[in-house]
Length: 94
Image 1 (tube, rainbow, N blue to C red):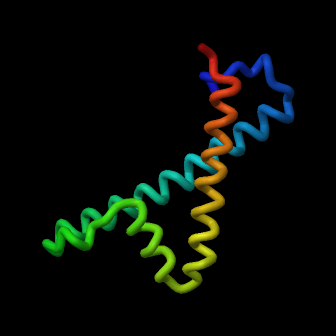
Image 2: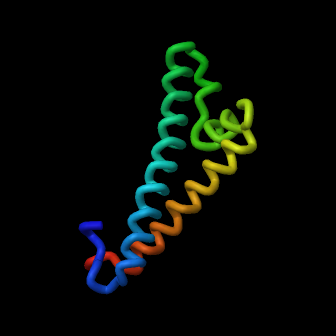
């Protein structure tokens, strides 16, 4: 929030943008962390073909119990991060 022009926002907009930022950034971090765990697992087991990236992380989520629900949460979180990115582009101090 310190890089955003809060004076140009209403109080409600500030609360919404902050919630989008916290939720979206957390979701993005969880997806990236899962990708990192898969890379470390591939390094430990010496199976480089198993590492993958974000796509492999999301496929791993889908293969879990309640996988479709977890995929939906990940998708909503990344969508939230995208909305926060649009807000940051609109109100970023330059």
